Image: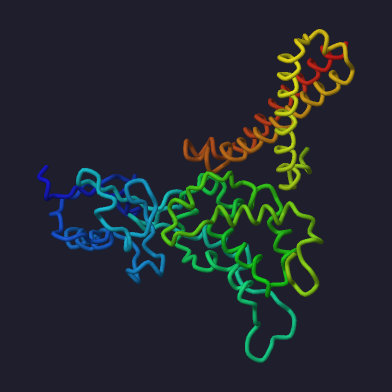
Length: 248
Length: 120
């Protein structure tokens, strides 16, 4: 194969036409300058209009184009082609562990169901102040590295525990968000949130293999957040929260 | 055992503390053997040692139970066996119960045998 030609092996599956998924090989001229994997997909779509994938913001904010690129999950829009090419070859597959709707498009229902379980909203029944609930800068700092998650599902779909028990184990993305609200001093439902996580599956099924950390396109650390949740779960609940919601 | 497995905290503690006990007990055996040259026969004449060894055996069974239960609930499910065949997937719960019964039975037999050897 000429060095200026790229070989793209892509997972293809259209349930209306195909009995089984298959890998289709495309050859495309190597672009003169480095492009993102999403741009490569656009070029391929010019060749073959039947290719399906999700995309929206093309700058790593919406989390739509999570996919498996050469065996590692990532966002196509912020993954430079040069960083993933191996001998001018690239393999694109859908996010593992979720049902495939078509080609690189997966059904995210299981992922969102788990996210919904952690009640991803502030719970505080005290009278709301006129403008906003204030926090000290130190308390606000606790949320850094947690709130930035874009729910692309790269982490959860790279986690074997989530593959095996997507209905019971919440997965790294949901757990990162669970800790985001556990760490928020304005949230007053800490004990209830912990109670919901106390079964052997929701949190404890994480064995700390850290795939989630290695694939997160935003550089977040769900494994650390899960560790913090485990620490809170192992503490005596009475020690965790005071009447005004502040954590000890 | 079923209710105990509903608490993630309890199983987490059991796994960690039993592992710590194993390390401490084995380190004690090594230390005693290399420093005093005490034989197993001599140790076995002590009731404290017999009790410690019995606890070791029982904790090993609990530790193994939690580990194997985790493996079973990961790999012997409708979803995972369903990857192989839908028939197998449909009978996953029954298969997992059989698997659990076998290792509980084996664990109980092994523990009973060792306790008998240690004490009688």
